Length: 136
Image (cartoon, rainbow, N blue to C red):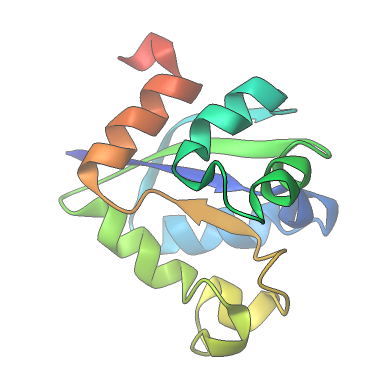
């Protein structure tokens, strides 16, 4: 089985969309193998978004993900799970996300796009180790 990492971001939690989003993952036959509602610490967020350090939007990105609790998930499926999750999520910009995707159906703003999913097996391993070190 293959694992990937997902965050239901603060806007998804605030809008009470946890059940809707998790339900979509589970209806796609993915399993939640670890979860935790957590206020992400600033230092953890800066590590998580390290590839964007120095970019003009970095501070806003960190402020957003740390503003209120997020639901952190490790999701498991039969193979290329990250690709399945990314397809379910839809395009990063919800205005370009296809209907039927999480962002296409439920989000409007790119800065508040409800969900994060690892973009490769390598980033999944890195993100799981950062947020769920006990699973390493």
